[in-house]
Length: 249
Image (cartoon, rainbow, N blue to C red):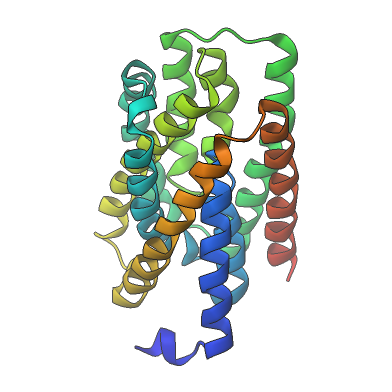
């Protein structure tokens, strides 16, 4: 495989460590790990292939995290988001193939960074989200998910405003993200965006996230809501700045 021939042992070790670390973060926060791994991978292999590769990896990661937290899953919130999201994911994923690498990097960075003021605004307004509100947010989330990794962060204020505690939030968002990646991969698989090399790399990264998710789940149960929010914000800024740097480079 040419992809692996071009990656040194030291780089493969970095990818392995990054997958374990970011999946632990993802398991503990419910967000952040996916786009952080995307940021690391984009620095190594380029921006354009990362969404298809991470779609494969996150399919495995979200499956394991959803199973680990299945007892806390909220079915009503799940369907309120997923039903309107799926058609928008399909439309946006088809658009992704026509975008330049620089545009993808800027878009990824901007979406991730904008999630911070959105969450803080929502928290200050003490949003009370109904199922209808969740569905509206799900449609926006669906479109952004078709062209990027990380829009799950935009669902945070609405899902928390719906009344989900941190365990239920992590479990339900994992199930939503699982459907998102299945849909996105269905589109990418019908194009040249996902070839055998990227599929294999995505599977390898995905398998590495399974132990990380277990570690993150253990940390989650010991984490306060205040620390949870602070950690997510810090990681958000780091990930966004990395994407902007890649766009400029």
